[in-house]
Image (cartoon, rainbow, N blue to C red; front, side, top):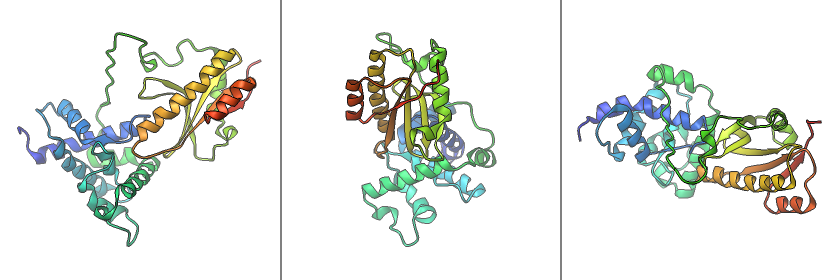
Length: 290
């Protein structure tokens, strides 16, 4: 080992927090494994192999700096985990002293399902907390440049949709309907607090027309304008199914509900309406194009 633990913890803490915040700002997995963090720090700190078991100390230093400037910040170190998606024993003190309910069970006495409930609640709190930019500046200074780097090298088959510019090849009719969807979450039965974004990238390489999020609640709208044929509408149903499963997979081992909505400008043919219902895809008709 060619690095000192104290140096790794002090120098690595801001990079670890920056990586976590990057993931939370996108539709990436909402956690960082010890192995992933170790590889990122090897690259950013230009050091030799970092042992994943040392990342717990980096997460502890990160959280210590955070609490020194913001005692109301949720324990984001819960999102630094093993491959099981559950943080290690180093998180126990933060759970027991900063998070658990009065007279609630300590971390070591929680079973797997209860620990996952804690992880879910922390994820919700972390995403809703609005002070991360200020916390970062006060605890560590300026954020590093973007750390997540996707390197798609596949030569066969279709390249990821996310590799192309947003809106490439999109019709004006589709663009108008997509914008209406983003600006009108209530039209899809979504409660206040859902925020919509267009062209959200998924880890599968797909790009979602409209994604609504509220903490760890999700709703995806696939848009098919007046230009869409029946075959396009059928494809839209199965796109919805695919996006739902990809988003659910990125959240595991925490289980989340993803609502899927197919927005069209005409009624679905009866056989497609029946298929959508069977697959749990809600359809909504709204016309914005003449």
